[in-house]
Length: 340
Image (cartoon, rainbow, N blue to C red; front, side, top):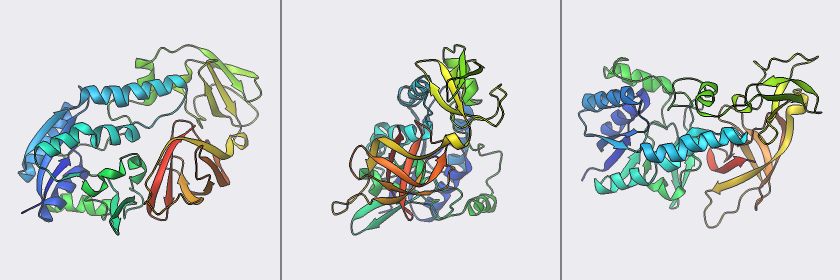
């Protein structure tokens, strides 16, 4: 009997080629498009065309209410609190691999859930763990660290062993045209525009002071939610050396700036950490950490019981509250948490 899989299909090239790889490997594939927000009709149409191209069943699952409460509202609350969220990290455990998708797969007798993420699931002696993709430049394991490890045995990432260049070549080889697939989404998939535009449209913004790390007033801002930690451009202040956004103080309605040297830090604390360790393992004290998706890994030491205090072996720039710190041992992802 052929294995069955629920493939989340966005309308982009990655989920399209994930369908191709699964079919080539003998799976019965049911394409599922998640209706996340009212304006996603274009990607929904693209997803339907891709399912038609491969001649596989296609369903649209309305998860707008859950997406709004878990992702959009949480993102807005984070900006209001002066921290910088990552919506994808919120979306993956609660929406893409959440209860509604699991229920759909169960009701349709679909044994696996698959996506077009670049990541891998490995198994050793009955223990499953998440690991990096073959294509280091596209690896998305960082975004998946909060997906419950109990789901790992039922997850498939067909692109984990492929380079992006191979994915594009497959699309050309099978005749999948650019007109059929959607462009890759940015961090705010639910909003056409920048996070600043999103904040302006949805948050009550109030002018306030821009100050130095010593409390000196340097200028005025139009709303602290319009800024991000580490930002240098668009600050509207003059100083004897370059300044960067160091902290966003919601209680004082202030944006605090600092020099690059003052922005370097060697330690931080995790909150709401999740780990995937076997029964015989304890958290290693020496690990590698990524403090944002595009950052390089850094060697660190971590206190292996809460509160998780992380000591970096070399100082890093602009460690940002609200972003995720994700920990690796080689290619294996061990877990992570939010930077406090």
